[in-house]
Image (cartoon, rainbow, N blue to C red; front, side, top):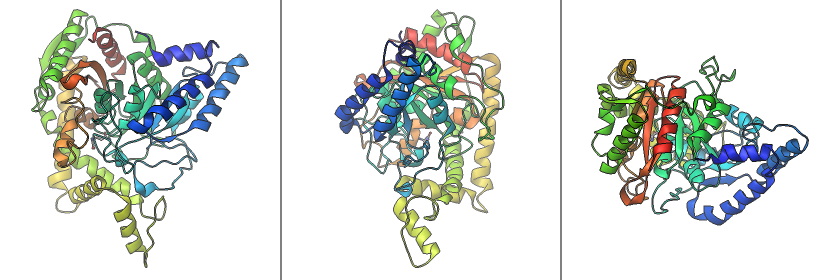
Length: 475
Ligand code: GLN
């Protein structure tokens, strides 16, 4: 299977293709088709042209622009680019232009990548459908009556539609993997600390990770290799550089031990075609020389409950800074406290307000132990359960999302049904582990299905080998 981004970088580096031509083509395509999909909040046409020209000039001068030479990349709009509006899908950041650039964006640019624009997301990355964006939903390129998933739905849709060859999202409870599954692309949540969060607007700091979207596993590996590694601006980064993924990508799975996580595969609400995809994927790994067994990780059934205490708790603290003074929107009032309240009332949407209230409640004196404390204990249990399973297994499999893409509006009335979209992806965030979604055929309504590959902390090299075999075997 060819890898569009890797192949494009090779032809730009060798001078057989011009980065500028690629950008012009992508921008024309976005202008023609994005009005229907609304993957972008901002298209950076002139910046992209300038970056492409610089790449072409480097090639002409005999220099190597880098491993992403001329590759169009899209950024979820919670990633900061100095001087460029960054909205997080929220009214509260209206007019705010960050004074600095995210480390991941700097690394992409230094590798020759061309940033095409900022993509739509659920407000502050809270959601699973991109319908919580203050700027209207994104639609799934496979069926515009359906959601692309979320919260990184704009980046997933943009890569699935071919607007950008690569994309970045953030994943706090599944926001890269779930939209990747629903849009039929590859999405990776790296191990916590592998990718710098500097310049990512925080949602829940102990869970957030930035990661790639791509149409192939190889392209995702290329992008992760570019963005990964320690950063003096993020003290939670793992201090040692992780091994590069591309050299071992095709080492195969012979001798690897794979577990199918029972609790995440047999959970209520998993569509039969989705469960079937996990079983077929496991059979393909077995055929390629791996051993497969069913494994139990009992505490994962409490993952969703723990997540919806820990993530809102952290969010309620992180979002306290939007006070009408330092960022974006201000609603004037007679005194400061009234101004703060009026700004927050006008600037935040319903889901963000719900999370802030949930989180504030969970952290309040008297309830702290019963809610936040218990959730942290579950988090520890999940880490222990997974550690036990990883003594026997090199990687695990499960569905990414219980269902294929749902209709726009289908889950907006009841937040709990929306939250259930992430039941399979949340445990990896709570544990800080690596996980990714790989497309595996289609399910109900002929829509894409994703299989999730889970690996322990720093298990990316094995995880990508498994993903590569799955991609080659996928229907
Ligand atoms: N859908 C989950 C939530 O709403 C996860 C979001 C994310 O990973 N950013 O919190």
